[in-house]
Figure 1 (cartoon, one colour):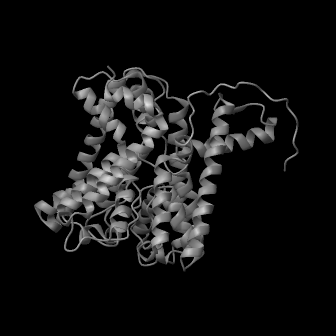
Figure 2 (spheres, one colour):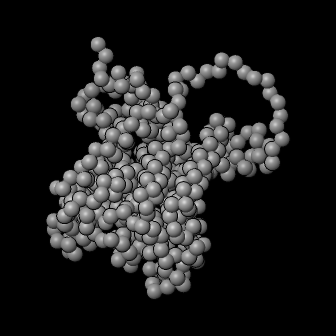
Figure 3 (cartoon, rainbow, N blue to C red):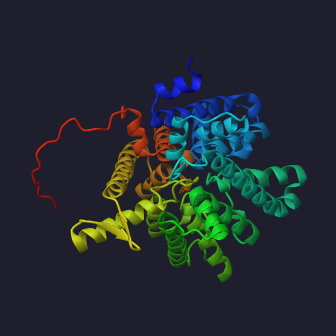
Length: 447
């Protein structure tokens, strides 16, 4: 007799289970946030509760209502759980529950989790799952302790500790939610403790679990760092430093004008880190210059790294695209290599598909918003990119969106967290990937 788990994996493919698990969590979360007990006063319209749930589960941070004003403590606890589940994934939560209950993971479950977590192989899976949760809760716990040094004196023991936990989970999961103000962390632009703690949590959550375990094995056993880890670390450093430099130059006499030199540098670093996928802000992006918004869109597209809580196309995808361009110039695309390691053509093709699909979905979303909404087209484009890349930054138009606009952003956030390719595979039966026959080749002129 087949168990429920076996029937589930026989009926649905990995992509379908992934999409359905997120959809289930979103439905449950939206219903809970609609309950009077989860609200301060009258519940918000369902579309706003759905928007909040999608934003939390898809670890984005865009909001149409202010969480600490609209939702009670219970409602905020629901948001914490949604962010945690969204950052780690329902399938991962189920897996860790099975591990702690001493239940053996099925091969199909391991394969599904391998794809979701970007684990290179299926070995030592139970240990790997335990390590993810141990790492997550230790880092979030340390972040909460550091934030408590600031929030407990300001809000008191109860609210101070709760807000510290809320923001620590939100930052590590790259969700961008806070429960202390209506203007994100703008009031703390000059606070080094808040800035560097939140930045550290964002980076640690966005690097990917594979990278941290690889670094741990390198330090403990002297293992060679994988090519993936090297690409992630180098690209992350380059993106953060360059993003901070450009923000500093562009906004020096604008949003940074009233800050001293050290605070300007710190604010620039913070915005560069949060550009990647986090959604927190210590300056008002509605007052930023057009060039800052345009450059911000580029950095949001790059995003974080695979296998973690980050969004965007991912750093490794961007590097592979650059490698492909260089290879086309140097050898006509015969082979692709970086740091004396060859990259398969399958990975290059996948990177090109990801880039094309992100761009296509963004254009479609922007086209609809240009019809349904009024306002600056660049601000609307910024909103679209922020949603599809699950970043959560806004130029101040989220709360003014029409019903159609909210639905568009909801779909963009969902697609961005799930991944455009996964959405396509949801509707495709890919159980048989073999070719039945091949057609003759013929050249086509392009360019």
